[in-house]
Image 1 (tube, rainbow, N blue to C red):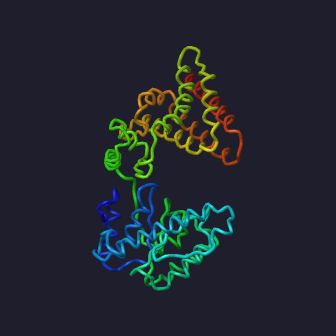
Image 2: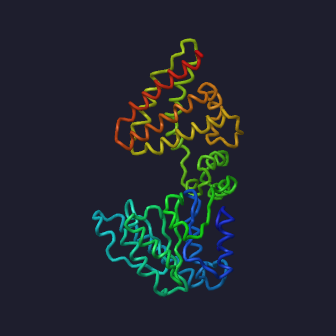
Image 3: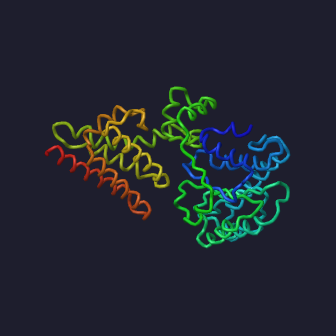
Amino acid sequence: MGFDSFVGNTQAVKVLRDILASGRIPGALLFGGPDGVGKKTLAAMFAKALNCEQFLDDFCGQCTRCLKVQVMLDTARSDLALRKDLKEVARRTEGFVYFDVQVIEPLGRFILIEQVRQLRNVAYTHPFELSRRVFIIDQAQAVHWQAVDVLLKVLEESPETTTLVLVCTNRYELRPTIRSRCRLIQFTAVDEPAVMKILADEGRVPEAQQPLVARLTAGSVARAKDFNLDEFQHKRKPWMEFLSGLLDRATRVSGEPDWKLLFESTRALAERREEFQEILRIGYSLLGDLMRILEGQPDSEVTNLDVIERLRNWAPKLRLNGIEALKSGLDEAYRLYARNINLQLCLDALAVDVHILLKEQKAS
């Protein structure tokens, strides 16, 4: 138990322990960095350490206060889950009760003004059961514009016995006035050996696949724990068939791609609209790998390690112009997805455009 149990981001942990040891606790901290690297987990640990009866710069997890913090966190999360399930949006903000340690996150698309007002009302009062109150604002960039000024007022007049921990992926989505009033704790992706150790300890992923899963999840512990490699490869298969249909036959004498395979792959890519954002991310990851191979970067920089030989074969055929054209096509597909327009037609057109470009490159 304690901070030693936290995986990765040792510098962030060190900064927090130094803050605790100094006794000079900021009124607001900003935990910024990639998804899935433990920002909320470390915020919860910090709340325990601020109140622990045993340690000054750590937490035991066993004393009365540490246990009380955990109960408050669990209760807050259960309350949030129940509120999110309410169909009537107006009822989601009824009867807010904030504990000494509270998780605040969007009830839908936004963190609503009623949530932030309740934070302000409670923040300036003395804690009921603990020595210091901690409010963890998850997805802080989702604070509704009507509530931003209320939050800013709290940050400007920092409560003596309350610390706010704002958690977000991209801190630049927050107003500069909010960022400037928070002590930044920067998080980075967890290194691959640490992720592989977690996978090995869990025993869910075969040893031979652990390096691939660690690479595909890009240093996200949360993603690695839930990652389904078979499902990922199933979703990636249409992209591989798309590239194969575009490039493998086109290098033969006829120069024509495998149109049947191409159009079957575009249909497979577009048919599950609810998953299209994730499918697009897989496409972008393949394009990124093709670019890295074309630039001569080492294998350690390639994400899709299990298909690296095929990517090595395709990269010089596409060249820089082909990769850029494919990326522009994926960007356009995302724009059309947001506008609820036929995605397969967009991908079909992309295949034709890239084929014409490749023929021109071959002729030049």
